[in-house]
Image (cartoon, rainbow, N blue to C red; front, side, top):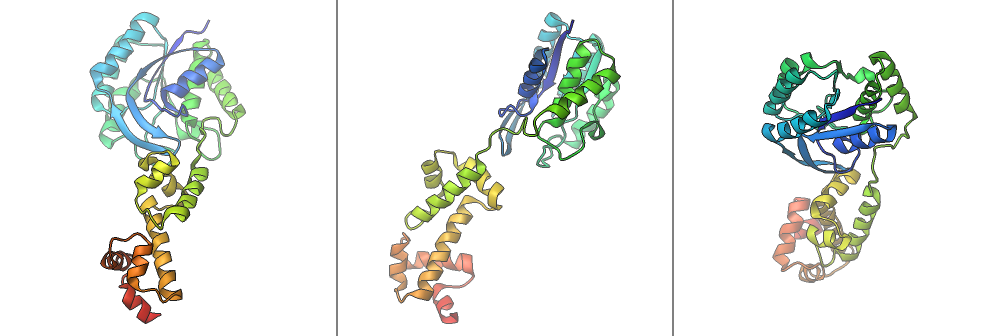
Length: 297
């Protein structure tokens, strides 16, 4: 009969990785998962914005509450970002001595972001790795492009098969086979990035004559300005403000070259407070004043 599996890692609000994904996958396989959270992340399918790392006493309380009650013999460890947490876990694991300790290093995100400092990983190498019965390596993962949460999925599946009493060799084989059968987008979430980006461009085209602030467009699209920024950078490599300003500069340029409108009228048409305001804006983006630009043309 399988025993409880304790997963010790960070949270991922999208469910694609972290403790949420561990619990889901272990449950889908038919196992019983318990958890202790090391870090609360602020993230979505576009990436991580913030970490709120829990201190060692809080993590210890979670771990010991599960160990004292459920006595899990399989412990899977993922994201650790504080040296005091690593030190505490090493102490608890030396005392408790579960049958299997699986460490699935979470050092960088799939987008290449560094998640763990060198000092923390040095502590992991010194104190935690010697206690682990299994440390997953990149070579353990299925061949092909890296997917969000793939190491997490392998470690969770491996923990499940070990909880059935299988040997490490058999458990690895079954876990690899299970992962290969998962859909390619199993943990990718449902990002609406491209759709929202197109909606933003449409809104800019509609409102750039009157509005140049990002907050206005974010409100129109019913998202935060921060999320809108993530979307535009992912799809174009530019900030929302840069896209808005680029459209306004393009319109000024068009009006300067194709009409005889006075600069004062152009400024009023595009919502600038004055002709001087427009001139400063144009020079900032084009490197010359509107008058100099007209002379060059």
